[in-house]
Length: 451
Ligand code: PA5
Image (cartoon, rainbow, N blue to C red; front, side, top):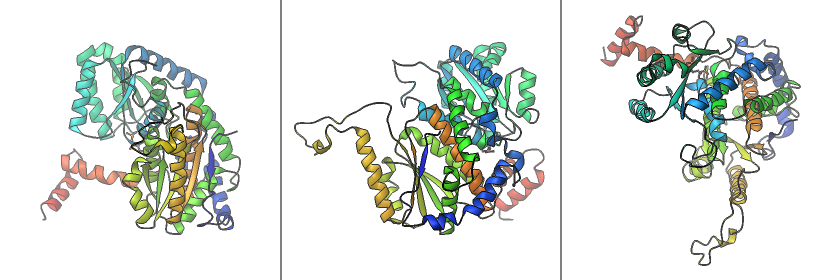
């Protein structure tokens, strides 16, 4: 039994059920490739069964380490980039108090912050200023163990930790999450004696949220990782049991987005009406962008937060180039109550909604926008969650992962590699004079100098 519902009730003007069902044979083939691991990139399909296979010992160990970190740290720094931090951040920010860290009351959990997801000098220098004032611990997360951004950030924070606490105590504040045998981070962790968790060989970064990559930071933030896994497990069962477009929500989503793409809708925007879901969108953008954008193909994944972005991107979506479809995530029940007060003077003219909850107004804004966008030739898909908690977010994550695998296969690409990411790295290393890049250095300098 799953809580998430996926609906395409507003799609009729763009795609009939009959047209959609034409996709069933393609979807069935791709579904079979995914669950029987026979398609492209099949050595990276460990995530498909992950929620059903996570063992008790791993969960207990993560919970125990999280408990220790919560005792010693006011701040927990997650060092990682791409799939090595976005999943954790998506879940934590979806569940966190939006003003976590600034409240004097309520649950006291370490504030989770992020490093090594950019090479910004000002960001990292400012982070050191904060960490000089706080007790902190660090997770350094890199599957390859060779990624520049987290490696540089960890080098900086390791030195800071060792200076602040001494080498022995610093070691107790560092957890490394990396490949079981390869990469510089694995060697460094072994040499330094850090507690280390393994990222399974067959799980790629952007599909790794249900490994220690996501689970450790989420547990440190105080959330129930067992409920998260339980939600993902329930969704997995709904996704693997049948390829049917009618019965499997992930099949339906994958089929619809590919049908719309073939009709010229090349951009999908993921829309939310809750600021706390911003990083679910960022995680989703990476998942779909890196999985599908290759070989000259792929739906461009973009994200907006409404109603905020109705006052920025709203104009384009309603009225610009007609290449967009949207998928709207809604949450039925807010966790907190807040009504709009009556005001005798009514100078802002808002008494017509006095007494209503803010959520009712948000819901009407949602419906009004969906209808306006349909009128503006923007097909609309909907994902609704009854409420935001670990279980429903677990469902949402797995739903998107499974649909992404299916959708990439329908598109005809390998959804589990990312060859395009190497291009900037090659140039950066050549420009920085990395040993082994001498030929590339000469070539790029000649290019810059117009030779
Ligand atoms: O999904 C992916 O594979 C990537 O986004 C990686 O997660 C990202 O590049 C970070 O790689 P690594 O964990 O090896 O440092």
